Structures are given as structure tokens and as C-alpha cells.
Image (cartoon, rainbow, N blue to C red; front, side, top):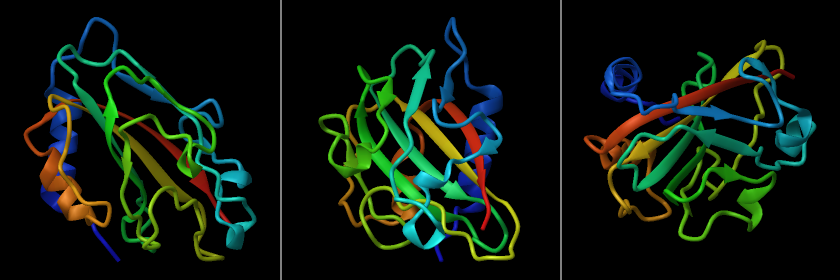
Length: 180
């Protein structure tokens, strides 16, 4: 299973604490669930009772100079071992919303979905092992000072981490939970 490196997690923490914030705070939200709330079943994989539909996401307050966004969705439960559910790069700076079900053909023009830990491109919804309790899924949006990241669709999580390093202007995140 892939892991976020300690340095990447540290970089994200430092970015959240010390990067300058624009006039409005850089915020990420989902119309489908509240921050810290339960992710509705339809967004889970079929094996966990869902339809594997990617959830809608909306953001505001991007830092000045943002040229594109990158998105990572990671299950941080110890059993999941930082399982990657969605990696998206090259989301244009003019975009502030990803609609419900976007992973199945409605992604913003130019956005590239990388492979998840299920080894498929795009959204791989929650499917935590039964009996392991609630899993926490961290949705992290990175505002970047670069128009485009040059990664192949089969790039690994470590490649994503390396590609955004030094380009992050701001970080916004929300958490959702899911349990079988």
C-alpha cells in the first residue's frame, strides 16, 4: 500500500500553519457532507454498499498567484495505511467546483486523474474493511504556483508529492468518515 512520506505530511502541516492567506481564507467544502461528518454511502465503492460516485467539492479564497490546483484524497486510518482514493492534477485556477460524479467524465477541462491505490484512474470510493471502525478520509486541495504538473496518469503518490513540492501557495482540507 502506498504511504505519504513523513516529509510530505510535514510539508502539508507547515503549509497550513505558515503560508500567507489571501483576503478570504482558503477553504474546501463538500455539498454532500460536513467537515468531519459521514460520507454518504453512494460515494463508497459497490463492495461497501455504494455506487463509487465521486463527491462534489467546492472551494473559495484561493491565494493570490494560484495558477492551478491539485487534489489528494487519502484514508488515514492505521489499517488503510494512507490509502489513496483520488489524485487529480492540473485543475485550472478558474475552477472552484468539481461536480457530483465528475470522475466519470465531468472533470474540468485540463484536469488529469491519476491512478488511486485500487490501481484505477479517478475516484476510488471508501471501502474500509468490515469491523475496523470509522475511517477518516482527508480531502486536501493544493493551490499551486504552476500552470501544469507533468505527471503520467499512472504516477504514484510519491511522484505527486515530489511534483507539488515547492509549488504550494495554500492548502485547504476537509475530512469525512465512512464505516462498514
